[in-house]
Length: 178
Image (cartoon, rainbow, N blue to C red; front, side):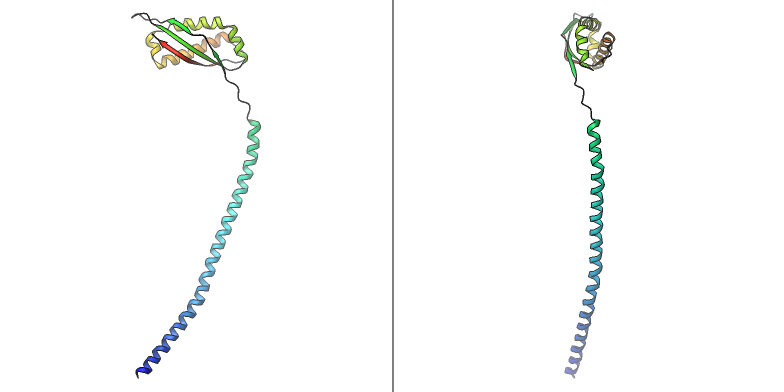
């Protein structure tokens, strides 16, 4: 009896093994096919998107590069005119103080340089009058120096009154108060 039960059990185990192998084999084929299809679709989408992006970006860049080259004009050369130093007495009741200023003038055009050199005595006189009218406290303040720059620009442009351009900026290369 024991051997009969054992045989039934062995036969049942073989049937289970056959069912497992039969169910696993077709199951693997079915589960592998959808994965392969999904991977293939994803790869095709990525490749198509990459190709589309490449063509759109490269097509958009080529005309832009061509357009920017002619649009860029030669930058104007900056023209600086170094002026001789100015030494003036400041308005101060506490004692005698003087101001030494060395400046460079930025001009809008090279043609203005000759005109400015021609009118140099008038320009220097105007700047000397302006500098000597300033007080010590006014020159020690950064805003006072900025106002001084603006006043110099206004006075120089009024004298030059040139169709070639104007004075753009004033740069103090030395500014000493003693």
